[in-house]
Image 1 (cartoon, rainbow, N blue to C red):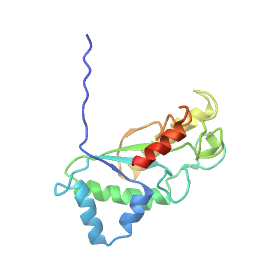
Image 2 (cartoon, helix red, strand yellow):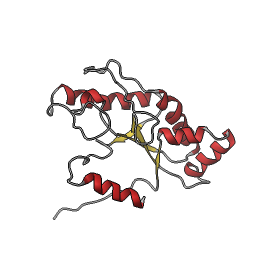
Image 3 (cartoon, one colour):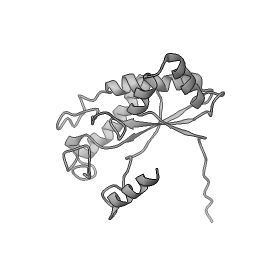
Image 4 (cartoon, rainbow, N blue to C red):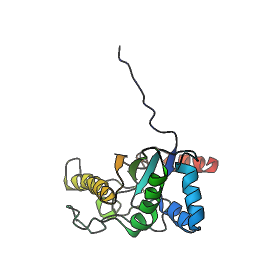
Length: 186
């Protein structure tokens, strides 16, 4: 008989989106410290896991990727954006300074760059072009590697990654209807 063990890693999960950064940076420095402290310090609720959208997400002011250059399979043009450097990373660093815990950060992409997708757009239903092991899939894997390295170069260690925000979108019959119904209750 096999034993299955589950290790619960964190108490609470935070989300470092563009929208969160815009709102936090739009309040006074004193209020910013109090807000971040209330989530990450011992005087607060001590969040210990942080999710980072890899490029744009539903809470971004515009759609963007880290490499919008058509057929750049080696990702020579990969770079973090202003949103990462000004809205996400500084707040993550503040949280790390205030926390006595080691915050585990993980990245989640909402979509591959548009040039890698069958629909040619980051939004909507589209799949990664090609087949497993080809140049598109290798470029997508490299995208993850470059994301981790870029964040670590900015002093944020990435603990984990997910393959996609909503990996089943487009594959479940009635998914859009289900998604709409669920949004009513959230």
